[in-house]
Length: 179
Image 1 (cartoon, rainbow, N blue to C red):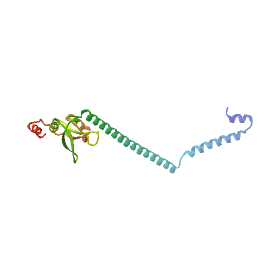
Image 2: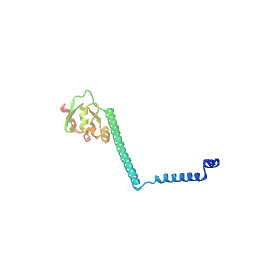
Image 3: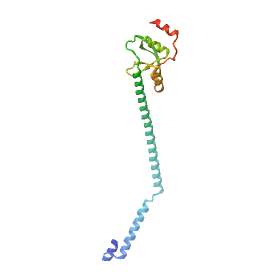
C-alpha cells in the first residue's frame, strides 16, 4: 500500500487532492525530462566542444608518440656508445713503450698517435685501424681490422683510419729503413 492510499484511508487527504498531486508529479517529471532536450544551438555547441576535446586528445597522443620516439632514439644512441666504448677498450692495442709518431687526418686536422714499428706496418697494410676512444679528447686507440668493421656498422664516426687491406710486399720492408 502506498503513502497516498494510507493518507486517503486516514482521511487526511481528499481523493481529488490526491489525484491533483499525482497529476502535478507527472507534469514535473515530464517538464524535467523535456528540459533535458537541448536547443539546436546548445547541441551544436556540445558537438563543437566534443570535437575540440577529441582534437586535443589526438594532438596530445601525437606529442607523446614523438616524445617516446625521441626517448627511444636517445636510449639507442647511448647503448651504441656504450657498446663502442666496450669494444674499443677490450681490443685496444696501444703500447705504452711506443715511440714512433704516426700522423693521420681527423676531419680537417692532423692528429698523431704513438706506435711501434710492427704497428706502423700493420696500419699501412690495413690490419690495424685507428679509432676514437672515450678516455679524453685526444684518445686514439689502435684496434684490429675486424673490430674497426664492427664499429663502422653502428658508430662510423669512431673509425678514423682504416687503410684497404694489402698483402704486404717488398715496399713494406723499405719502411723499416726510415727508423
